[in-house]
Amino acid sequence: MKFYSTNNNMEKVSFKEALTEGMPLDNGLYMPEFIPDHSKLIKGISSLDIKDISYVIAASFLNQDFKNSDIEEIIDNSITFDSPLINIYNNIQILELFHGPTLAFKDFGARFMARTMEKVVANKDRELNILVATSGDTGSAVANGFYNVEGINVIILYPSKKVSHIQEKQLTTLGNNIYALEVDGSFDQCQALVKKAFLDLSLKKKINLSSANSINIARLIPQTFYYFNAYSKIKDKSNVVISVPSGNFGNVTAGLLSKKMGLPIEKFIASTNSNKSVPDFIINGVYEPYETIQTISNAMDVGNPSNIKRILDIYKKSDNLKKDMLSWSYDDAQTINAIRRILKNNKYILDPHSAVGLLGLENYIKYNSNCNGVFLGTAHPSKFLDIIETQINEKIKIPNRLKDVLKKEKKSLFIKNDYQDFSNYLLENFI
Image (tube, rainbow, N blue to C red; front, top):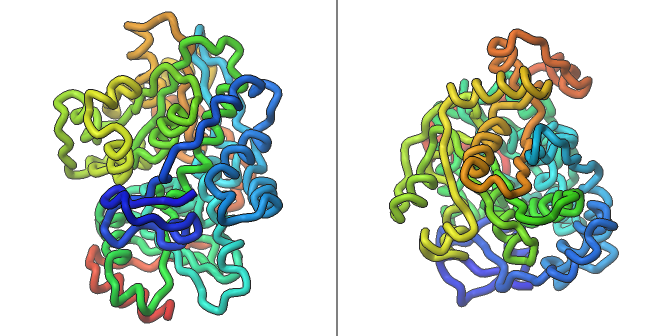
């Protein structure tokens, strides 16, 4: 399998090149040269576990670059937890993706990516430096996934005072090969610094750089695993609709790729918070990025989602996209009301991001009641204690692995939203 840039489909690179480069120099994003057909996987999928499913899909993308035994080892060491499907009420179920080490769905992508990169850099004399911008959960998942991986440094940029206290602790307390930069700006500005570094040829000649954001194709591939795994668990497989809390749109892009691979999902719902550049694009057919709006579902605070490039590469126009995906936005008040309602009526506590996903699904079901709905539970509610507990007047049980993190000392460097300062930091510390 080769990969091309969304800005140039003529020049192709190997998976290893796409993995280590992160993004093409032409400012596009890597896409597979073809989407593999896994429709045959569907026939017996109910008898497969998540590792079986993951191996089949991963091999179709990686088999030209890795031996089968290496792919099996990557899956065995990264997909070490399941994603339960829990009924909330009627025909609405939540796919709990927060049973990994950092209690967020991004553990799937980050751990898979860490294991593949570990294979690539093994026995090389030049360190790989991974840049990652985070609006919350990406940073902690990447930090945990790459912690103490030999030959790899991780530099995390996060917006100051715009992530939850626990999220900040998770990404700033590891040390060793993990470096946290607290940026005076928004997530979009953090992401812009990372993208500019990848396009800086003079910097890349001196420092070996890669990315762990969803701009890296190695983050998207493992996210397709849990869509197939969810389908394997659904008892009534007719008219399945999946709602995805969406920020940088990597998660729903993986869902759309799954559908193109043969997963029989009727419709995807991209549910956003007040950052609604994509919902507006679906309505009027013109994509325009917006300034980021800060919300209580902070990991989705993205005004200009990177993965819109991949979605447009697949679908070209909004009219084509609407056949497979709809998109609606919800504000903080609607999000809080959903959390309170589900706790009161169904005794289940949602985090703010998952609540947005539920709202999108409920909106779809108003007009299409004859469907089986799934929404993604993207993070454990304990990661947002400071937001949720004050709204529900109830204590949330904190898993032990989060309690341990809260006791650790924060280690981060505050920097301005200035590319020259950022590049100087990289040159001073990672040559």
